[in-house]
Amino acid sequence: MRVIVFGATGMVGQGVLRESLLAPDVTEVLVVTRTATGVRHPKLREVTLTDFADLGPIAGELSGYDACFYCLGVSSLGMDEASYTRVSYDCPMAAARTLAALNPRMTFIYVSGSGTDANSRLMWARVKGRTEQEILGLFPNGYAFRPGFIQPTHGARSRTGWYNTLYSLTAPLVPALRRLLPRQVTTTDAIGRGMLRAARTGFPRRVVTNADLR
Figure 1: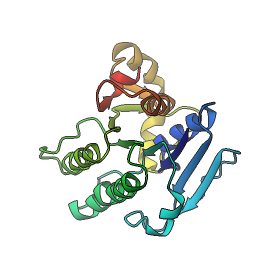
Figure 2: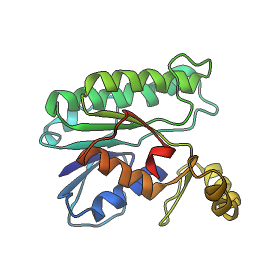
Figure 3: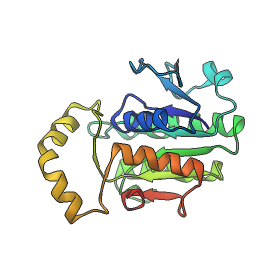
Figure 4: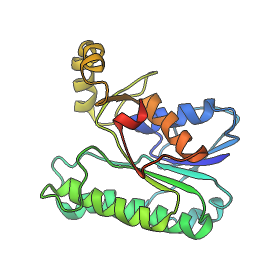
């Protein structure tokens, strides 16, 4: 299986990349990135892209893949709707449209978040909900992953500083949270394994939550 990962330097993407490289049935991992991951592995290949809203410069590199794990995203804090839409709608849709034309049967997974809703009053939820709907419409094998609380594992770290502070402060509470709310807590490695499962055999539902990743 050949897979593409967007957002491999973010917290979720780091977990997805790790699990993809560990999987025996994954023969190649192509990371599309602005900055090098720093990871070295015989399965790994990286291509640099400056503008994620335009995949034209690398389109020739993207044929023949079985799955795309789109983990690129940002916090909406401090962003207006136009700026957030560019990152959370324009960029993933550029990837989805390009890949749907090149690999129409591929599994495409878009990471949104718990609470995503195209009809929400919350700007971030509305933007990501629209993105989910259009990606699921493009790909017969498309999925929206909506993780809630994510425990970073195996050294995964967010690129958002205050997220790392939050995770550090809550780390001692995670074992209790997992016991009390097992359906609400997941890990970066569980998300990665869940994406690979979707690529191999699919999920019963096209919107996947923490509870599905247990």
